[in-house]
Image (cartoon, rainbow, N blue to C red; front, side, top):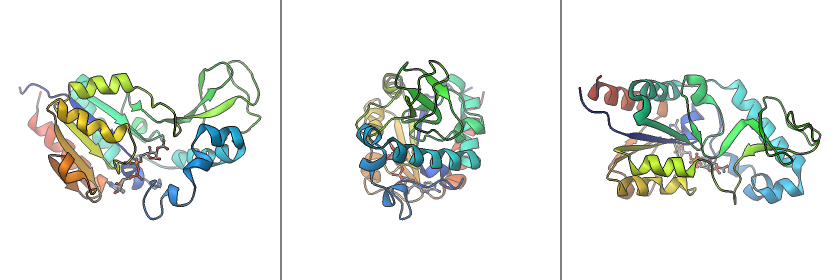
Length: 238
Ligand code: OAD
């Protein structure tokens, strides 16, 4: 038996693109239709909760209608094989990884299917639209719920856990992310410092890919991710 390597995978919007969810920076991407400062900052929510809620309500409905694709399932299979030596970090706020069978996913930018109460600070599962009059299931406060999304200007979740995993990583793979938003964009540097082999898997290589990654795999995630997973599983048999 080969000893299992510590694997850290970071996913971005590109892994859910073939499930029909839009990316942020593609030609038809979210940030070509909306301004970040109008819908994805704490200031925007304070100014216009309805606009921000509507933006995330649509995304929540889209995510609920979507189904996980072969790339999500391949990462769930990797976790099943490598168990504790596999860590999945996602910038995505959909739950397609979980619906494919992944567990303990580190949703560093939050989750669409949860709300956060600004009054009692508790989180609740939430699958329907959030409105300005929605009531917190815990403390029953009115007008106190916000989407559990990490907005620009806020600190991403699980940073300590992620940095710990990166400091022990033997293999780091960034899948379907443009690598433009920090701190996630810097994970490859942390992984390199730990001596990890770094791979990028993307529809097309990002401009910075060849200087940052040891290997760049191009193509749609539903093809490239199952191939990547299969190769690793075959290399490291129980
Ligand atoms: P982006 O929209 O910036 O990048 C998506 C990446 O996926 C691009 O590099 C595409 O080339 C790639 N891609 C598209 N389709 C693909 C496919 N079928 N297979 C493989 N790759 C594909 O999305 P993210 O990098 O996830 O944050 O964006 C990072 C963060 O910026 C998001 O979490 C969000 C956004 O603003 C917040 O809202 C806080």
